[in-house]
Structures are given as C-alpha cells and as structure tokens.
Image 1: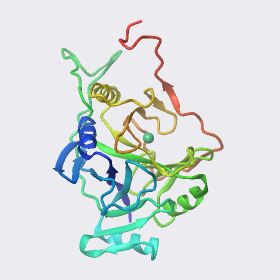
Image 2 (image 1 turned 120 degrees about the horizontal axis):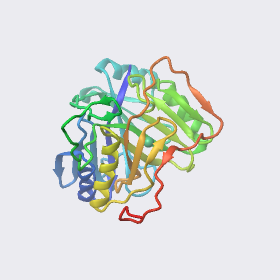
Image 3 (image 1 turned 60 degrees about the horizontal axis):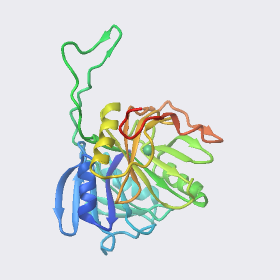
Image 4 (image 1 turned 60 degrees about the vertical axis):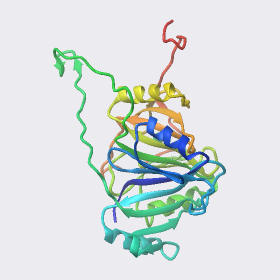
Length: 303
Ligand SMILES: [Fe+2]
C-alpha cells in the first residue's frame, strides 16, 4: 500500500485572500478562488486548500490561530485505501463513495488518504560551466524571477516529546514509513514507502508542542531557491532564517514565514535514499547546516 507523496494540505486561516496571495507569490497556481475557500496547485498537482479557521467543515485544530488542519497523503491505487483501513484498524474510516480514508494521528492531526493524482512536470536542467566541463557557450543565463514549486516535497510537523514513540509506532507501523535519520534529541526524518526522498515527513519534538512547523517546496536549483526567497521579500513577506544547506538531507534551503501557519521552505538538491538505506541514529543533532549564509555587508549587498 505505498503512500506516494503529500497530496493536499488543508489550512484553516484568518484571512483566505491574504493567504491565497501568499501562496500565489510563492509560485503556486490558483485553481479556485471562492468566498469561503481557495485552492492552489504545484506543478506536479498537489493542492493547498484554504478555508476560514472557524469554518465548521474543518477538522479540529491542534493549535490556536491559522494552521494546518488536515494532511492528505496520496496512495498509488484504490486498493491501497482498504489496506490502510485494515492496517490502522477501527480508528480509521473508509468512505467508499468518496474513495478516501480518514484517520487521526496520535498528535490529533487529521489525516486523509486518497489516490494520488500527479501531473508530471517538465523540468529542464539549467546548463552550467566548470573548467573544461562546458555546458553553455554563446549563451547567457536568464533570471528565474519567481519560484515555481515543482512539488511539496515534505511536511515538518511539531509534536510533543511525550508523543514521539507513539507517533513513530503509528507512522512506521501501519503506515509503513521508514525512519531514514533518527535524531534522538530532535526528531525523526521519515520516508513513505512510495518515495525516494531523504524525507517527505519530519516529526520534530524540539519545541515540545504540537503544530505545523513548515512545508517544503522543491524548485529546480540553488538559484531558484535564492530568487524565490528574494521575490517573497519583495512582495512583503518575511524570511525566517538565513539561507544555507542542511546537514541531514543535504538540500539548499530558504525559509519564509507563512500566514497560513508555520513557514514554507524552498529546497533544491535533496538527498535520495533507496530501499538499501539503513536507518542512521544520532544521539545528538549533528548540526543544522553544512553552511549558512554569512554577510558582513549592508542590506544593499555592498560592503
Ligand atoms: Fe524542511
């Protein structure tokens, strides 16, 4: 019953129009804008759904304010839904006419499972030059201008320390996620059965409080990570930490505060781990960054 990817994210927010503007600035494609709901898509057709936080149709929130209310996982085929219900047991509900499964995780986060509906994005790798490895002649690069997320590559969710073992048992047991990297003082990087990413789910207990931490948006390369962040700042959104490259996952990152809850992280060049990978266990966090941007310059970029 392979879980392939994050399929949709349902947020309950204070201001639907403002949050729709945020995700559009972030590079999502607006597919529906109604009075009580907005929906936006990545290039690979994963959806962000926005509703007002007091909308009675929303599942219960695990934290105050604007936040993620339901995480939808995409499975490979319809038969997988029945297997998920059987694996989770009576706590899960199979709604046959809608072809979905509903469940709630040990942290109170509502989950939904449906058959994945990807639209494969066309990606052309930018050419590059390095000494005698020449990929570009008589041609110059153009700016990306704005990030265009290919996909939502992972969700990072905060949990309490007290719920860590129960949460890992739930996700690695019936739902068959694999712990790729387990950091005993921070959290666990999980990979679903149908994915090859270093992680498509991260359960973090550092703040010792349940709620959304961030969602990660894969873009083409380093330049697009940087330019996407620049565009968000130009549009008035706030960066939440300096850009860098993570130690676990190896990806380049840039974080921006998300008015719908938590943050977004632009990422590129993340590690892939296949089935031969054996879980690594770290007693202590090996550090967040291979590198992080330092500057002795002013905001103009000039010293
Ligand atoms: Fe992340």
